[in-house]
Amino acid sequence: MTRNARARAWTWALNLIVLGSLLLAAHRYVNGEDLLGTLRRAHFGVLALAALLGLTYTFIKGVRFVGLTRPVGAPPGRTVLHAYIAAEAATILPGGVAMRAALLAQAGLPVARGSVPVLLASVQDQLVLATCALLGTLAVPSARPAVLGALGAFALIGAALAVPGLRRAASGALNALLTRAGAPGAWAAFTGGAAQVLRGRTLLITTLITFASVLVKIIALAACLAAVGASAPIVTLCLATVLPTMLGRLTPIPGGVGVTEAGMVTLLAASGVHTEMGLAASLLFRVTTVFVPVLIGAAVYFLTWRPRTDLQQPT
Figure 1 (cartoon, rainbow, N blue to C red):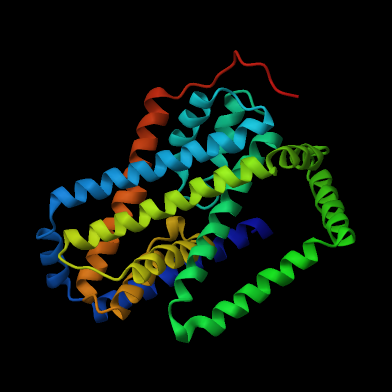
Figure 2: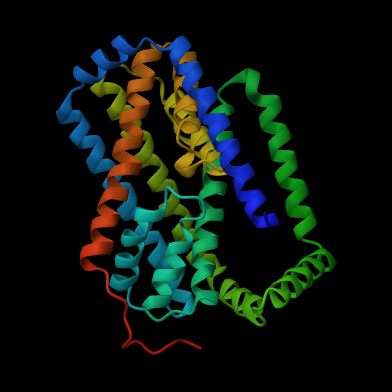
């Protein structure tokens, strides 16, 4: 067995262990009959609103992606938005966001340049989620020491990146790594594209759009709670949305399945939401904001997406 094969085997073994632990915890602490009863009593009109909010979230993120691709010479915005929605079909898979760069390549944008907005969108998501989490935890006095510690860590990272010598060393190492991997010039193309995107106006607009998308998800969680007859304070809604989302993205489990829901239930329960209601709301939230867009993305990809060969490849 090769090293890559062993790494993949260990990754999937870890996935199974984590999922098994979550299933065991659910079996011990969740009353299945109460959960099913809560789901049966859910208000489907409110769920329809949550599903609409999930689609709105996807559309807002697509508009943000269009804004990030324009500086690197992307195809028309309609084509980029089409590619973004089609690529939603792969977002629950590990590394599935790379499909966006692949579809942009089919639309005429080289991967080295198309990967710039894909990577920056992911980084922007994490930074905005972290900011929302920090702001939310500031309202919880017991969490303030951890918040200050996290802010200190961000400050140290920012200070390190501000040192020109460290930036040059890191850039040289990445360039050498890509050259050995058979992609000479890829790093230069990437950094060139990043320099075009990392400008004040583009970053300001796309960051504000990202905050708006997070707000839509928070409202969607509130709708899912209302659908099962529960509610939570705004701070809890914020934390239960952003913290599990961040944790789920950091795990190797496809779509963060299980990990994200467990985090949401824990945070909701801390504010007094009944466990079964919290689990039902988190499951509905994930279906309406993740799996419905994935299904629509799959339909768009298979039924409407066609590689474009008539566009001139940007240099």
